[in-house]
Structures are given as structure tokens and as C-alpha cells.
Length: 504
Ligand SMILES: Nc1nc2c(c(=O)[nH]1)N[C@H]1C(S)=C(S)[C@@H](COP(=O)(O)O)O[C@H]1N2
Ligand SMILES: [Mo]
Image (cartoon, rainbow, N blue to C red; front, side, top):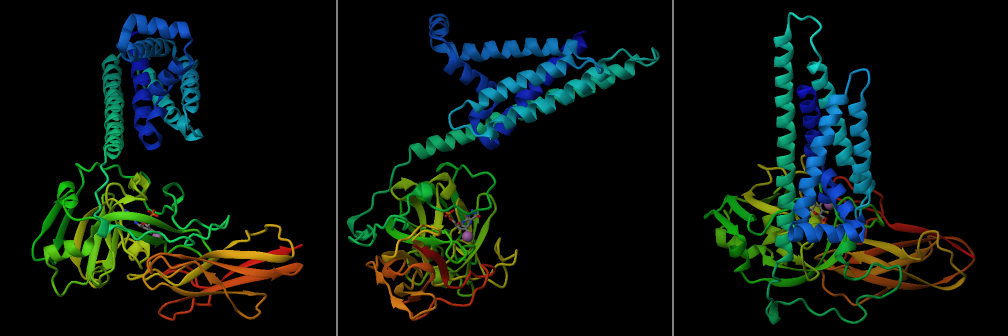
């Protein structure tokens, strides 16, 4: 009886512990006990709330958890006592409670179906523990070997207790880290930018403001996100540091205070992903503030034999950037803000690189914590090891955004519009043609800088029928967007973007 009750309690604790651990991957509010508690609080009738506050005062939450903990232990003990291998009543009780907890998790604000996962994984683990333990708690068939059975039970029970406690503790620890990082970001103080170091104002008309055309500045919430991180790193500014080593005269480790003691600048820079297909969405433009990379390189003293900065993120991603590019006077930054906010966690909080003119995979390391100064013939970065190029300047590109694909269009004057980019070279012209006819010069919005994308518009006198629009850009170095269609790997897609339009 005691053994069975113990088995039940351990199974219950396994559910909570494993659930807590898995919840870290999803959201703190998806942990089973927390979900039941929070949903209970939200649904409690007024009298219950008043009773709790009157009885426990500001300890009402603690009381709730103590109460829920005691109830869990009690129910779990009963489940253990009732469990039999041929009549799994205990397992059924856990399954039902699991459904209740999963249901509660699904009620949390912003919940997706993933919120049910911690409880479900926990219940599977808990029932397994219950079955294993109660099977070995059965009175031995052969009276000759009672010690064996007891030893086996003790070993299993200890293991289950360790798993439950270990996963609960790890889960709590990780949840705490998450909260610390959120708190740290909330208390972030935006760097002060001297007037001469601010980004130039965005002239009227730079954003053509045509509905359907990407805005000139991309809001953080809609900025494309590409990375290998299954779990977004959550570093605080206190934990963050940048270790600089390799082919340098003086190794240096920058703390957050060291970094922010430097002079920040503000710039508008367009980022692009090498994986973007012709006409694709993987580009965005933001106002960044950060610290010039070139001056940090100068401080550590770069060996004349070095040609690569191998930057590494806290989760092990690496990018190899040509030192020559970082030192040619362009605004390569260790960025700390994006569109007037601390970097979103997904975009690299607290520090990421932004390098005008290079694809993200060779330059834009998020959560950057380590710089090795090395050579391209000695080191290989993350994607280069996987078949992508070692060096990758951005290819001259343009896309049609309006009219939308499949949008109904009436004959007559139709506005065609989109975006073109060739970062750090700048866009010189954009041309549009219909059904492989002659090229027409599009009207370009004012150029903000050679490091940003540029919008274009063209008035089309559309006639009824099915037509194909095509666009190509030319950069200020005179390179015409390459016509031949090639896939993104290894150095970025080429080809002219088409759009088929049916005119009524
Ligand atoms: N740590 C880390 N940084 C990274 C990546 C990554 O996988 N891990 N991906 C890079 C790639 S391929 C691109 S295109 C840009 C995208 O930056 P964004 O997600 O802020 O748009 O980040 C770069 N920085
Ligand atoms: Mo990318």
C-alpha cells in the first residue's frame, strides 16, 4: 500500500517535472500546474477570489500553489493505490487530469495547440513511471525472492524521483533565465546618439506609400527572420560579452559596459537573405543603432595576414566576413537597437552584426559573443561547411509587388510598383516590360543611401487579356540584374522577376 502510494506520488511529480521542463520550449504559461492555477484564477467566481484574499492576503498565490501541490500529492497517491496492471485505474486518473491541465493550458492568452504539449509529454512519462513502479510493487509470485522485488522497486523509485526533481529544477532554472532576459530587455536604455551621428532624415517620397508595396522601413514585427536557432537565445546584457582573439596584437573581451562606452551611430540599412528566391520576401530595411566594427578592429590590431572575421553566436552559429569589407569605410555595426527598440530577441538581443552589402549568412551574426580574426584558407563558417559560398556580396535584385499575383485588374492605367536593392552599390535604374516587349524606365523613389533598398513605380496602359510583367534593376556600378535563372545556393538567386496578370 505504501509502495503503491509512493509510486503514484512519484508518477504525479514526474508529470509536473517533465511538464515544467517541456514548457520551457513553448511558454512558461504552458507548464501543467501553472496552467491549471492561472486558469483557475481567471475563472474563479468573485466570492472565491474574495475568500482567498481575505484568508491569505497577498499570499493568495502561494496558498493556491500549496493547495494545488497538496491536492496533486493526494490524488496521485490514490491513483497509485488504485493502479493494477490489468485494471489501470491510476493511469486513467492521470490521463483525465492531464486532459484537464492541457485544456487549461489551451485557455491561456495567446495559446496555440502547442501549449498542450508539456502536459501530454509529462503524462506519458508519469504513466510510464506508474506502470513500472506498480509492476515491481506487486507481491512477488515466488515468496523466495522478496528482497529482489524490494530492491528493484527502490532503484526504480529513486530514479523516478531523480528524473522528476531534475527536470522540474532544470525547467524552473530555464524559465527563470527567460524571465531575467525579458526583464533585462525591458530595462534597456537606448543609447544617446549625438546629432552628427544620427541617420539622415528619410525624405518625403522615399516611401511611395502604394498599398501592397513593402514600406520603406520594415516594422520589427514583420521583419523577416532567418536563423538556425530552435530556441531563441535569451542573453542579458550582464551575461553578454564579446571575446576577440586570433590574429590580433591585443586580445580583448568587451563587456556590455565597455561596448556602450564607445560612440554609437545610427544608420538605415537593408538586410537580405541569400536564400531569397527571385521575387521573394527575405529582405527588410531598418534603422539600427550600434557601434562601428572598424574602430574595434583597429583597437585590437589586426595582423596583415588575416583576411576573415569569424563571428560566433552564443548558440554556435558562425559567419565569415572579409576584414577588407569591414574596414573599407562602410557602416558595419555591432547593432543594439532596431527601429528605436532594443533588438527583439529573435533579431539578436542584445548585440548583432549589421554589414551593408553582404548577405546575412556571411555577416549578420545575431547574439554575437565571439570574434576570431583568422583567414579564409584556415576557417570555414557554418553555411560554407554546408555548401554555400565563403564570400557573398548581395546580387542586384528587383521585384514586382503591385499588382498582387492573381489580383483582378481592370484595363486602362494600372500602377505597377515594387522594390529594388543592390546594397552598398545603390540602384541606378529599374525597367519594366510587358510580354517581352521593349523595356520601359520605371520612376525611382529618391535614393535614401546606397545601403538601402529603393522603391519604384511604373504606369502601365493595360489592355484586356493575360499579360506577363517583368522587372530588372541596374546598380550604380552599371551591373544589370542577371537574366539567367539560378537557384539561391551557393551565392544568391539570379533571374528577372515575372508576374502574370489577367486584365479584364
Ligand atoms: N546567430 C545567428 N545569426 C544569424 C543567423 C543564424 O542562423 N544564427 N542567420 C543569418 C542569416 S542567414 C540571415 S539572412 C540574417 C537574418 O537576420 P534577421 O533574422 O534579423 O532578419 O541573420 C544572420 N544571422
Ligand atoms: Mo540568410
